[in-house]
Image (cartoon, rainbow, N blue to C red):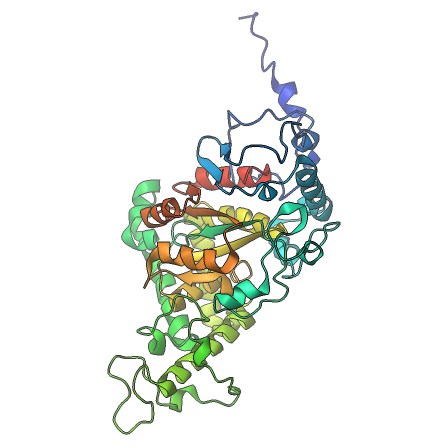
Length: 439
């Protein structure tokens, strides 16, 4: 027994100081207990960050076009493009990463609840020291990365969203239920069974949250009118909007009916699908967009004081019973949002209006602008992905994150890498891969 000195390796581990991390989000806190070191990662020096800035001289723009980046054998990013300009040189990649560190080095001293104000970047944000795509023509942005122009958005039926020459390198396509939030599995009992929680408690929380979702959707988001006129995207009927001022418009008295039977006899609602009916439908989606944008950071403003208290209690209790699932997912969402070159897009099988209510009530409005939310209820995820690719272009790398077979199949059809979320550990690994710049 003398031959085995106690804890001989403890000094080696202590040489990696958590405070030495000056990139990304703060080091993992107490809510992620028992994290084990991932084997198979590139060797990380005990000194911390400098090792992550070392790039092999073999990584150049003259590499073969078919590239594979892998993380733990779980995800592969494929670059099938024959355009070598999409693959930046080592110097360009270094410059991007250094600028990223310079811009966000102060974040690791902040508490969890202080992130949002620093991560909300304007649409026209370009990392310091990098020229805009206008300096290189419309074909590519700085460092050879593709830039999204407003003309592309217009061709996809979307209005220009600020300065769309922003550097867009990678878009993360997220599923909602059981990936970012836990909702559906609360109602079915599958979450309680899988993770050993009290079934009655979990079901009760799910039912209360469901009631809040539909109450918000019906009361403020026109779900009674729009349930049978569901759209994939909030702008899908914008072409039928004549731009009329809606500040004094009476939605309750305009005779609109979203049911297949049209309006009651004697009303002036017009035939469903007719010009007048479509205009009133477009008015509702325009007002829906206004409400979402005005209350995306303050959903409590749409609720009564009693409902606000109920929502706060439900948020807290659901986070507790799901072991901080949403908070863990939010770390990755905010890290992606903090990069000037990446974007989060939501593709959910929930109808659009209840999906917007869910996003607001779970506190994700600041992470997902309404124009980045798509409902696959009518057309399926594969077609949704097609629409997103037509909006942002094929030079952007797309990464799909979800728990279900539908998004996995759709990702495979589009040759997009897929990251499966089944447990908390999958969310933790995702954040590690993002933080180490593997994704």
